[in-house]
Image 1 (cartoon, one colour):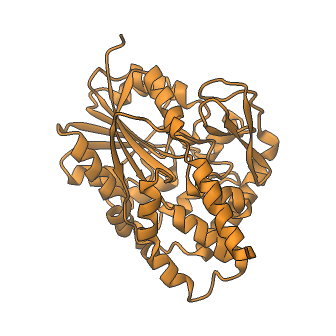
Image 2 (cartoon, rainbow, N blue to C red; image 1 turned 135 degrees about the vertical axis):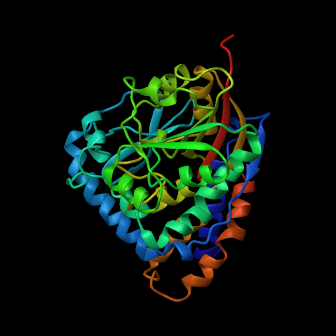
Length: 366
């Protein structure tokens, strides 16, 4: 067997190893895939390399403001081991629930600085607003990303009402929800993203959501959404306790989080120096398995009704390979990107996507 064939076999073996059915939730409606035009969103290897270099610099600035965890933050198991180290941040995987977590995350005050609600020009501010606050890409993001997510929710949740989007970012979900008939509001702490949302025609509420204001902001909500929020929160279980205690039975909760096992987890492990999404510090503190997310939701009387799996695993893997091989600027990569959706669909159906959205409903405690 030559080196090329051996490499392919290794990738297949690693991928099969990651697909562990003990993490999959049974008995719920499962949905797969979301086509995405990566080129139209300027997602190229050069873009990825630029974001990764900025993340590495930001990570270094917070290294001396970290704490150490001795157990899984989801199931509290003390049995965990190193999965990958990225930018000198160790990410461990729990032996019990499969959850991947930052074992030395930034302390609470450092995390708050990343998403500071009072200023938008500090050295330790998150890079991600640079990704989303682009006028030339906003409409494309709505069409490719936000609107399909709202359409999915509308298929599962039939009765519309007040939709509260926590961590609304640039307001694309709020705008899409309003467009489809919801009375939607968005809560966001990042002033740069709030101002950008207003330029795009969506007014957001400037708020850092915590125990002091949760009841007030969630009052009357028919649906509460947290798209790409829980992975940034040190104690997602505690945060969901606050959400659940602030809403009545029958309220829907929609959550999007990065997912493991996935091909992107494998790509981040193989190419940690190019981490720009999925497992990347200091922003992402958690990569959820279906099991670890289900633990949090069940503890808070939230029952999952539907799961949608999709992701950017093929782009994540191929772009990292292109950068590693020095081919990121070659024209060859354009046709590779054009094949992403077909290849990604196969990854999704194999339950190896890097993203999941769940629609849950609050039930009475038994």
